[in-house]
Length: 385
Image (tube, rainbow, N blue to C red; front, side, top):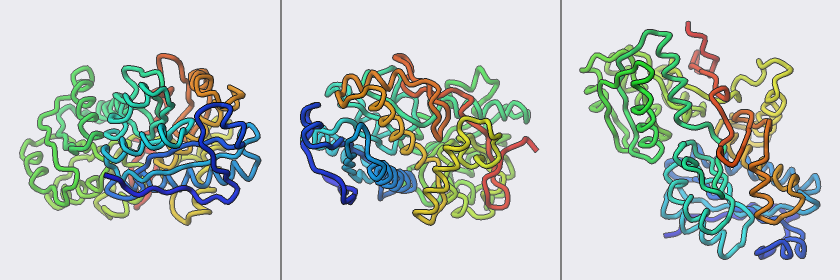
């Protein structure tokens, strides 16, 4: 099966078949691949990611490229399908000879791809958050979002301050949902949390009233939803329709204002961990992320006339990391570029301050998160009040 494939239409790009440093030098082009869910159920992730890469590649080439060479981006639309992602990965690596692939958008796709990239010694910079993507470490696989286990820990920390110990969990059947479920269950006991009821729903569900009615019957103190689909909005609406007043916690996959818009008033009060993109203007001037966050947000919103999201930020970070590694390596030799990624320390991205190492292929810690809530239809910093 094949989904849509898009080559970013940038006039200055040269076309090359790149299977080594000599090919890069001969054609004066650095070829990067991207596998993103531009359309389909995960389009709220892949769409902003694709647009971000289009913007960054155009700006980079206008400024002279990287190492004096233009960047060519070949973008494949997986539509969120792991099967399509695998097919596209083979095309990009074996036929196009890309230096690296940015993406995929979802954890399920990334899990399906990671073994292939490691075996074929090609860099994968995933834009998905599941810790299982990079744990255990595979030499050629990296990712830019914060780990889902850290997101769970931040949620549990807030619950402690609120005296919450009994919760209900509603979980998407997607890869992201099920990997998050594992983290919720693993970290609950050591944080004094009892998951009284855990219900998995189909990722394509449009009504979760039945699932939430079961949760309501258990008289829990809070509900956690773990998904990236439109279900994030559906859960909020169905809870309020059932008269459930418990706090609703969402994963860090809630970092797109479109989910708030879809839920309307039902989104008020949702609590979730996220990077600092929505808080950029309020950060102190000395904060190492501040200017980068402001620059990305303003550039994206000016170009595309839509709110920037943390998902686009993951692609932004992937592109910045691969170009930083190229500059550090001073070459397009993939082995040296891979090693250069592991050497990156104190590097500001939209998701946090990256400190990669041979044993850490995400490079982000718990301090990459802030806690946010929804107030008057907007994301605001959660203060516990």
